[in-house]
Amino acid sequence: MTLSDFIGALKDNPYFGAGFGLVGVGTALAVARKGAQVGMVFFRRNYMITLEVPSRDKSYHWLLSWITKHAKHTQHLSVETSYMQHESGRVHTQFDFHPSPGNHIIWYGRKWIRVERTREKQMVDLHTGTPWESVTFTALGRDRQIFFNILQEARELALKQEEGRTVMYTALGAEWRPFGFPRRRRPLSSVVLENGVAERIVDDVKEFIGNPKWYTDRGIPYRRGYLLYGPPGCGKSSFITALAGELGYSICLMSLSDRSLYCFYL
Image 1 (spheres, rainbow, N blue to C red):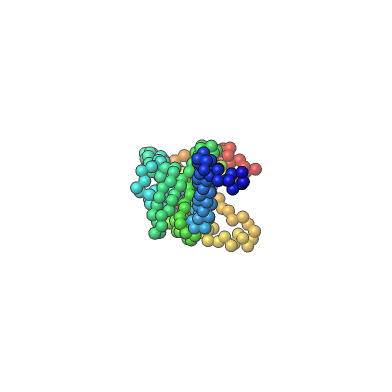
Image 2: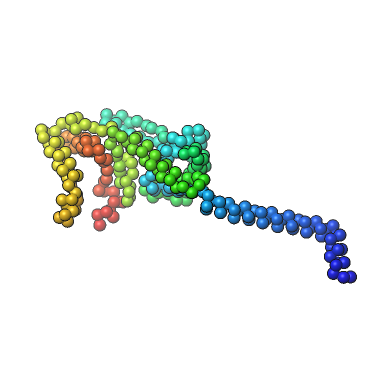
């Protein structure tokens, strides 16, 4: 039997033909699947742009508020509950809804943007106990300007919410975290002090703020402190709140007995 006769016999064999056909179909599917994966990677690298923002970044909470504003029709939400104590002592509870972890689609700047919010269950913030999160924006194209526009708009939205208010922060490890909701600015006239005391301090602070070069030229640390003393209820905390409102500054609270702050004093 010649080689050509042997090959012809194999072709006429139905079992061999079926097996060869299955192998060919499987090979074709594997090649097609691999080609689709390579094509998708090539497309993502060259025709899509992504932006990842971790929860430890300062703009993360700005972006959550921005996403909440633009994803009004999403049905998958998570809640943040916070408390704010008024000066009268009354405690107000506020619920803020944000899109839950997962994928959300937003129409912005004449483009569809996929927003993916992920949560790492195995990694948590050692100070607050909350899991690490990140949010990733994905859009078609190669122009990153759309992400600059989103960040700028989110920042302006956050500043608008704080406009005319005093923001409180508290120290958590090596960073400052917002403490409660921004408070309405308190006027200096609402704090009763001896005549001229409030005015002298305000003028001194403004002079210090406006003359950083004087300290730089002389090699002096650009710092200034004020010690307010007196019995409880005499207006120390109230004056600090009013002073911050007068200058448009925020207030940062820290406890010297906090063990996590020891590294700053060693």
